Image 1 (cartoon, rainbow, N blue to C red):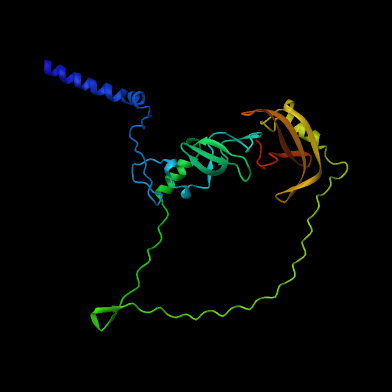
Image 2: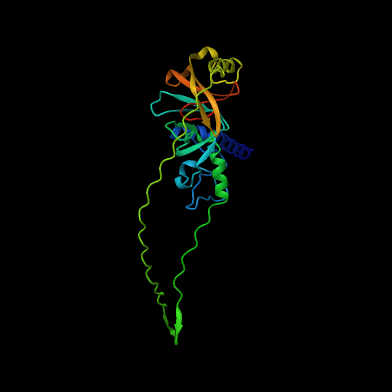
Length: 277
């Protein structure tokens, strides 16, 4: 009977230790234990991983990281001075600058704007997993020069390389006159009696066509006197300056409206050219 109770006590102690071991390890060592059933990943030089290993973006070779990632959650990015910030909504693809620990440093495109998001809020792990399954093929090794038998089986010589005559120098071409620069087309002025840009922008915001800011947030309206050509199409443009609460305090931010046939077709950030939702 005592032996039976002793065995039950050992089993109970094992169950309690298995259940509370992660919390005890955190209190004693300060290190967060890895999820059970997962292994730390060791990246091979070819970018692949062994079966059963998990992806760790921080140790992945920097030259094998993808150029772009897709956001799974909204991300806030700011310029180098921190005066202007914007929100890039989930589903957009952004440039991956680098991986810093468990975070990814991203940028919406050329310019000073950068942001930091957790790696798990992007599709980086999925891309690296696919890359690990199909690592790039290694280049074929260079074979040594073939030995040619001569007379005895114990004697062999390396064939001398073929002599290639040096190419004759090409005649120096006479300098040609530089072509005259093609004159740049001047912006087309907006014809008299055209669309009231300010009224169109106000109607767009009152109609709820944009969620980034409200009509009451706008502090200044500006209508451009010329048309602007974007992706081969001509638009009337206007600027709405509004107040917004950012991580750096209340800032004045500008939004550009592209107007076609008396209606706002798109709202853009003036500097980056990204669309405002």
